[in-house]
Image 1: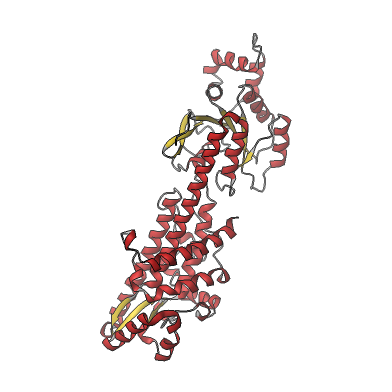
Image 2 (image 1 turned 90 degrees about the vertical axis):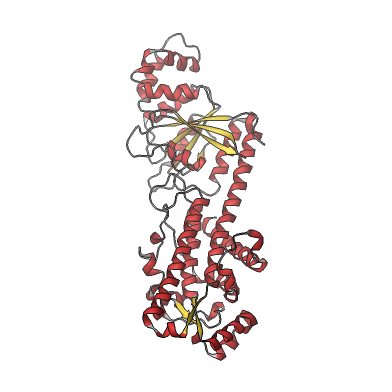
Length: 466
């Protein structure tokens, strides 16, 4: 149900305070406006809408930076015949200086007189100089509610306390801390709740915006977890049959291994692109090669012997997480095992976790002289560790951030062992390696497993972002 009336908000502040960055993050429009370290990047008023249920709910106006508020304040104070502060603003806008020395400031103040409220974006790394005090005073003259938005508060040189004291001196107590590049969890909700405090008559509408954004957040997180869980199930279930003749021929055997590895990498890259799309980022905004521990070479390091040896040590040789039947830590084959190397005793020992179906298939393959390539737990561990870190990074990334998405610390074995243990159920179902095109055709057990993995991913990501 659309809002009865559009809420209009002017985003104002000093040059390079982060106004456009804030709007990119609030509207998830990564290409909106231009972001630059050059002063005065935004020269005209531009609008962008936040939609609720497909209809515009809040219209934001990105305004030029205030550049010379001290001189403008002196000029406006000298104007005669202005009984109220808004009269001074209107008198200035009618005068010649609004089209000359103070053209940019005039665009800001003209828009402030038209909107329901203003957001005053502050770079808290800046000291509270006279020019900022002048900006605050001039903005209050527009007789519109102004909500300060404190940007860059997590930077080491932030002067947040100094700014809060200054704002309180101007009776601006309703302010919000919102890092446009790396927002706090829940900061978006607080921003609209504080705005609802300033615009009491629009509080029901703004609370509907909050509810809509919360629903979007939950849906986004659920979709992201499903992408990762689906990837892990597909890779755990992957089987590549290889005849004894092909296995005996080293070039052909290496070709099978190379193709298998390429399929794993393609599936991983596709999952990363799908995650970016869910969070409103562009393909290529996160490069798998930037994930910590991979040393900039996804193709080399995901299957690098040293990477896998380290993963094997962390996993305790794999047995501690319920390794699948027939899997061996065969580093020589770049993280892939040959099922035919399984001894009968090892196969029988895995019946409890793998089921008779897989055991029967392996015996049949052995009789036919067919072996299978499968993915080692060590590779799944490395991939899952970084996917969890990437999920957490996307949760904390604003749409104004520049450069590639960089995941943080990879998940630890203690976090991942329950997930990998549950994942072993996919080993006995090679048909789960490809997600069915029709949702109705998705096997119920596969769907249930993805849901269970998704719940474990939720807990791991919340522990990192909460």
